[in-house]
Image (tube, rainbow, N blue to C red):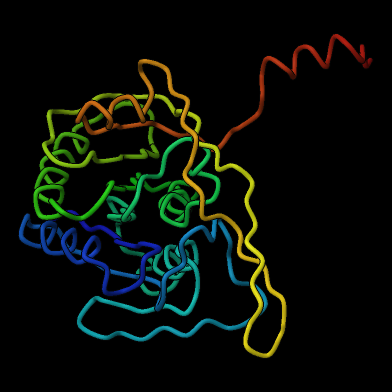
Length: 246
């Protein structure tokens, strides 16, 4: 029996995490759920170091954490499940795509990446919406069985995004670009205190033929391998030549 840690950034009662938990359990996996006690979207890869964390088990193997998705993975690996063989850290299913520059902001990707950093094969899973969440969970279960047979570089980190509606198949993709135009809304509360709301405008997409956004727009599941080393190797060579350091 394979053992998985399931995290997310949407909180404990998201349809995405519950559907994935049920599909994995019915598929014979041993599932330990560690999720933030509230939504933590766009919290990026932050660990809570300035206060103690509280954890509550609300049902068997289902834990609430008053921290971030990365906290959830860390606590599971190094305390609650310390010494257990973990086959996968799975993060999601997130409501809304995580593609392009989203991976730097995404708590969903961070939850999986924390597992990857510590040597566990990890997968972030996101979907456009939850209209077909049961089909997504069933499809992912079969996809995970295929992924389990992979004998390449380990650990690996995969970022998977599901399209809306019919699932035509899967494609291995690269990251697109998904930039949110700068926008700040100024608000004034009933007591006259000014505040500022970031975002609220649609993203601008730019993707090549083999990119994640192109795949999901055409009805395919995008599977994008990620890595921790984000060094710009081309610029590194140019800077070495430019500065000519000895």
